[in-house]
Length: 242
Image (cartoon, rainbow, N blue to C red; front, side, top):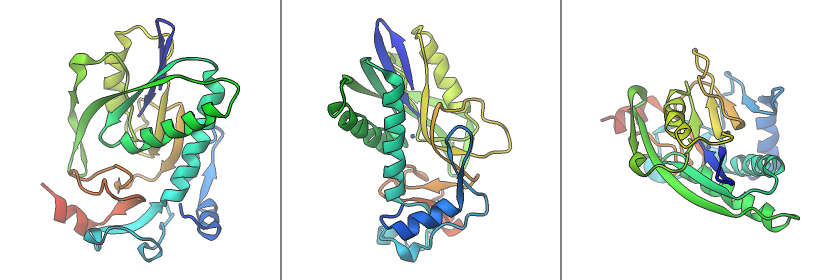
């Protein structure tokens, strides 16, 4: 997400396999909508865990790999290119929503920096953080806890967007800084029964309404050390429930 203030551009981040064969399998189970969003079908069974390496302490806690790490990286690079095309020549402040958005933010920033170094114009960037908490176990709560908002002079985003209530609430804080423009970049958007109240301008993947973990997305602070985005199993939910 980005916004202008005092001639500065504030950018906000809300956020498969390494083989051609597995990537082609994902492509068959995905489609791109008119907004160039990679949509994963509801009936996509995911990849077998046997095809990937992942921490042994999570054996039995996952159902499948829904988006392998290699594909996440490819899609993140594409988003970085789209953002570069739209930004033009602007200084930006990157604001990352902790904790789930940190990995997407870090990888996206790295790719923007790489593209900037190899283009006709460079984009100076600063990075700031804010922490949000709106989940207990696998349920989104009505309460949104914003940690660090007392020093909020930048916007921050998320790695995954569900109903959009969390981001909508956060945006109210950002609007007090009177930005000229606000845009959101999200790695994942869930298809939920209720239409999202806040839809990202840049989306990596639209996924089924299943509880996913990995790539810094957690379940009660577990699974952040998982590189792939996976679907947690029912036994995994019970094991780490609080």
